[in-house]
Image 1: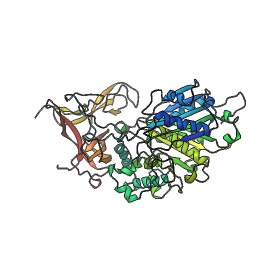
Image 2 (image 1 turned 180 degrees about the horizontal axis):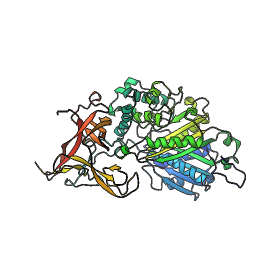
Image 3 (image 1 turned 45 degrees about the horizontal axis):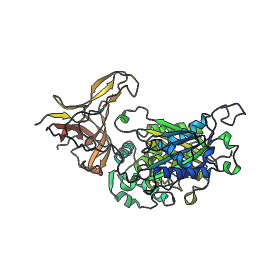
Image 4 (image 1 turned 45 degrees about the vertical axis):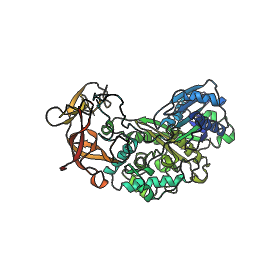
Length: 413
Length: 136
């Protein structure tokens, strides 16, 4: 293979590598006194300071928010600096933040920019259950077929569920139907792990340890997901500053030595599968993304020092062990039973606390997990640091679906 | 009994036994309950109809305990693999909504019930699946 990036001067052999030089996130939680522009601007300013850069160094910007899409990036610019650069507002459900990061990566790889700012932000407050719950009608109720299924009335709870705890419960139970050794207790152990991990993360929305009994005994939402196995809604933002490798080589040594290489950046959507027509299929596109990312980076799943994956519900984390090739095929139950994804295990998963306890402000999540892995690779994760971490993987899924996987590596440049 | 309409247009309740009717791609046979502009599997635009089996097995389920106030809980939601092809999302009815009563891969059969009545007295008929052998 030809040399990737950094080719002879004036001879662009392949797209340049992209590196992270700044990363920041707000603590996730609830910020009734701030708006989403405040949260995003705070993370952006912190990320640029972390990079030793200012808005005047950026030649591209991308901002992700699921619920606040309308020119949010431009409204942020009015707080952090209006310099006339290209600004993209992106939305991709729970993969929104990763989509913003990837938008900047693509602009750099295309040669349109050499440094850029990506932000993910969300303000949700206490949003409650997300999904297509039944809507009440206020006019005379006469049954008339409506929409692509010809519904005459709301079907949630009548023809199955489309609300998130149940959708992801069904995704986990489909795995249990096909693989031995997976049940309520395995799913609950995942929540026990992530709550425990979050106790070391000051940026997590919650930092409370729960016993397995407390988790299994907390109010059932959608079997097997109890309340403590579901992520909370919340507010927060995360931002990263990205540069081309060529630009990185011109920067201060203190910036270079903390830089983290993006060895793979992948985005997939759902390929057609039969069961995906009636229930979102979160598996196939994750497998596609993971396989592409491993191939692009040359990293093997066994090389990973830590993984931040999309544990919106405990049932989701378990199936992604298999989808991301962290365990033997069909072996996700054994994987959690063995303690492999614990922070002192073979492949630590969600040492931040994961969405279950760190929180899940939708647009911020996919940028925040990149912040998390980059912070470990820099050796700056404080009490929750995974010792000597060199390689990490991030994964998010936006239901519908969009999946993004990034592989980050600590390397010298 | 008032006039009856199906709750969704892929449930057929005309004469005879009710059944689910899918849009089937004439090229590749892919099945859809909703209207599609083109086949998501092969891209062709011609569709016919396919009557689906009324029996299948529970490929996955959940027992929903928390829902919007107008929805009665707990209830069992499931994905059913139908005999002869096709997947359907459905409630599992005529079963206790407890994990020990709902088995993964258990055989089920379709049934119908009145899910609502509008202000003109028209009844919306919905489908559900019940365990084979259920006498409820």
